[in-house]
Length: 164
Image 1 (cartoon, rainbow, N blue to C red):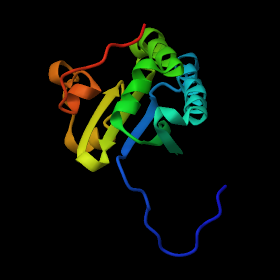
Image 2 (cartoon, rainbow, N blue to C red):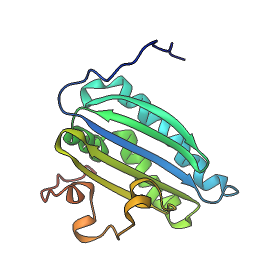
Image 3 (tube, helix red, strand yellow):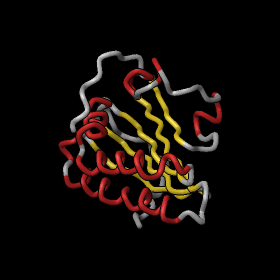
Image 4 (tube, helix red, strand yellow):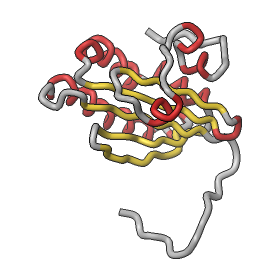
């Protein structure tokens, strides 16, 4: 555990910054075979990010809520975050596994919220989640059409292709 810094401070960061909050909600604790693989997928993704700093990942903090883990990540840019989401080997496998094996059961939910700090933009998505975070504050709307993808929710139209 890091040593506490005595005194009052502020972050000395300058430049583009994206705060990405991602987590999961265990909706049926007894369905361990559904939520445990989702939980276990997080470690390899974080290890991949720490090993490859050129991807734009800066650091992260881990928190545990009564429903499951929450990771607060810091990125250099949204484009780098999106590139990892669409092309990162560990993330693509975890994303596909969740969508094919866990999402339909509703035993586990996942969410993320993205804040582009220097542009004042944000987006979020919640899958099989109780009302949480910004969705709890602002209410929920279906993630379809112009709200289907993170880039669209941020106001963009042109989306890069997903690697197969």
